[in-house]
Amino acid sequence: MCSLCGVLGGNEHWTDAAARPGVFTRNHASPDRRRERAERVRSANEMLSGFGLVLTDWQGASFVLSTRTGRSEIIEDIGHLWPAAERLAGRSCDPLDVAFIARMEARHVD
Image: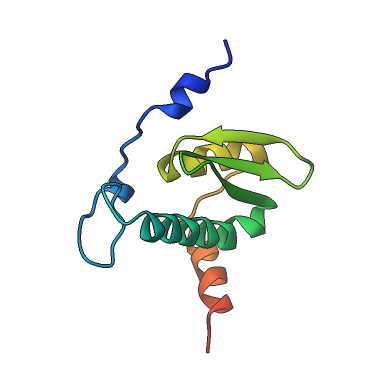
């Protein structure tokens, strides 16, 4: 089987659940939903670039995490990002590591 049925089904995730003005929700405002999802991908890619990884949106339902050499893994939601990143990078990818946070903050010094 191709497992496409699992991708087409609903996948509620805590990052999608807030129904407040200006905040993403699956229930309405499709342009806002796509914009928020694109912002999540942009933010993730900023962090993943140091590991040689790129995240792309796949049909608004899942994500594809890829290496520079083309190895890829489909992930269901952002909650699965870091374990998949470690598998593809072959090393620890801890976004809470003090050195990692310092590098990210150094990029944004005004």
